[in-house]
Image (tube, rainbow, N blue to C red; front, top):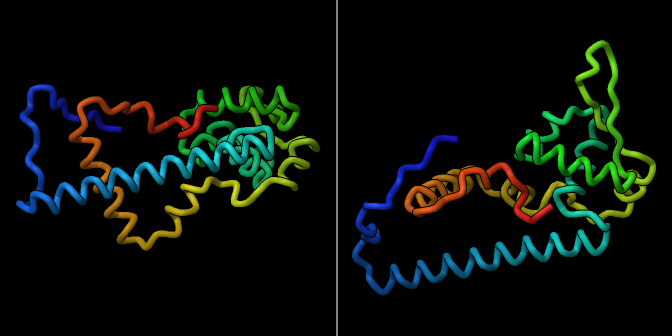
Length: 176
């Protein structure tokens, strides 16, 4: 990810257009929609945790491993859009709960392959769907033009913010 420009010494940006009150109302509407989005994601994560005993990100990881038994940690991290070390920490928790196992196979013993255990499969059999993440599902359902506009708008917003956490892009939304 490219480094975002520093705005520490920049004057506050003028809002686009000269709508005044209309722009203010639009800003408030966006803030409210972001709140709804964040609270929806928190609620989804809380329901997963209560129903399954694992976080939403952990459940997603289990689903990915079930879909492709023998998946590598690196491949899993790419599918979940998280850092490899974050995936590894998540897998430690799943392994301690007896839901997933790591196996070394083949000539290169450094390569670890992931498999669900019978307990992990049982959890998935009773888990709410879609497990691949409510946000991921919703984003994939957006029309291509809307997704592109959202990506561009969020990119612009992050460039203007003074303290974006660039490392946050590779961590699950809810704490794991």
